Image (cartoon, rainbow, N blue to C red; front, side):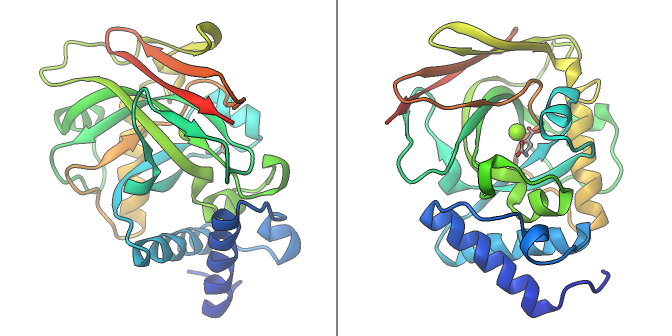
Length: 265
Ligand code: OOG
Ligand code: MG
């Protein structure tokens, strides 16, 4: 790790983000008010922030990938895959309601998710990734950046902010044996039944399984593996949209099913 930040600065920044989330108060991007830092330091701020949540009783249950499709890269102006950590407290029930109270500026986006049934480490192929899946399903991720106006411009900022993670809803899924071509499934997001965005699953790195491989590689770079039983969000295939009170948000993934939640004011 390089030394742009001291350990105490890393701790301070993770606490600043933790407080911003707890109080639902947006802050300026860290690199704007503070100073530049690198990707390794950004992941350290992220994991210190997760430690703060674990101390409050939360449990890590998986990971989410970000910027794995062109639509997302272009929406946010950043072009390299990143990951964030998912905890049990972030999960919202399928068909449940999501209150806007105590949120900053939440958005939702359609995702494909995996649940793994064996530990994964190092460099793996899409076939190995598929063989390690116990479930493949459709999800809606609910993002809520801690940064002003949902704008941050740099990868270190968004990585430190746990890749804008806030909540996620897991919907229908299928179990092995998988008779699916994962590169060619239609995925669409709707608001009150009206389609907002649709894409092919190949929008995610050409094959969403490559996003799972990329996560395992990114974890390996940090000396970590992906434990069996992890939930993994592969990254949105389309842009994200803002949430509005009273709306029913849903996503459909061809051959797999549906996920939905309603937004409460
Ligand atoms: C960062 C998170 C990106 C995805 O699916 O690409 C992400 C953001 O959009 O602020 O979750
Ligand atoms: Mg996402």
